[in-house]
Amino acid sequence: MIRLIRAYLNAGIMDGGVVVDRHLGTPQGGPLSPLLANVLLDEVDKALEVRGYSFARYADDCNVYVGSQKAGERVMAYLRRLYTGLKLQINEAKSAVASAFGRKFLGYELWVAKGREVKCAVAHKALDNFKARIRQLTRRSGGRSMAQGVDKLRPYLLGWKAYFGMAQTPKVWRRLDEWLRHRLRATQLRHWKRPKTIYRELKALGANEDVAKQVAGNCHRWWRNVPSCSTAC
Image 1 (cartoon, rainbow, N blue to C red):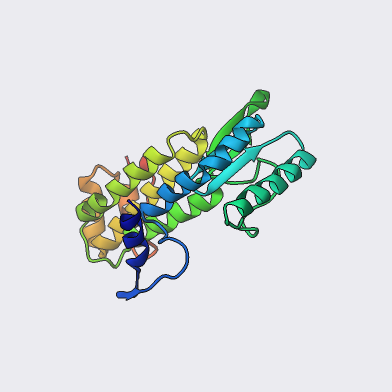
Image 2: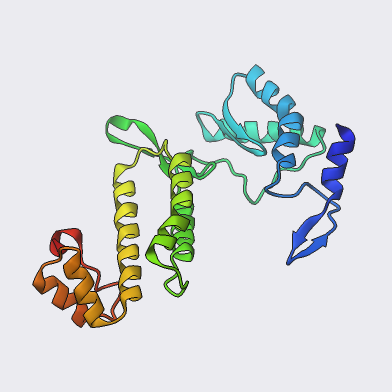
């Protein structure tokens, strides 16, 4: 087992198609990093459990939940001692003693609903990353048909939805759905290009006369020109 771990660490990483040697740490995104984190930080988990702390840890990412700022500072000092004993160093830039609200953990954040019920939501950075990835997958100059674009989009959407399935924010899901559908319609208009083609295809899809003419007449304003479902039918 030790020889296998050593082989992983000595394998290096790919940077611009070139293998680069590593002299510190484990390759990010690989299977070895969370495995070694779980083995090494098991001692930290047990120490926190003995003291009765509520905490959540995934690999090297950990949140400890306490009732006050002072308690948080005591826990942080305690963790520094534990990590130092394991010859590890806390990333001070990413660590803080702060309210659980406004902090993200594995792409999630917490919010307070009616009745002071605490619920999960997708963190803002994760939403921004989602939109950036969708823009990349639906580039209008990609040279792909709409069917090909949807086939490429589907696995990412299914995986993203499954990961963030615990999010308790129905309005966010609806807004993302509307934004995605709007982008796909804009992409389709771009594929059709010419006013006559746009008019013909919209009519074939059941759009009324006025909407088909209006969209075809403004064919170069792709994003603003997208008809909604209610006006197109």
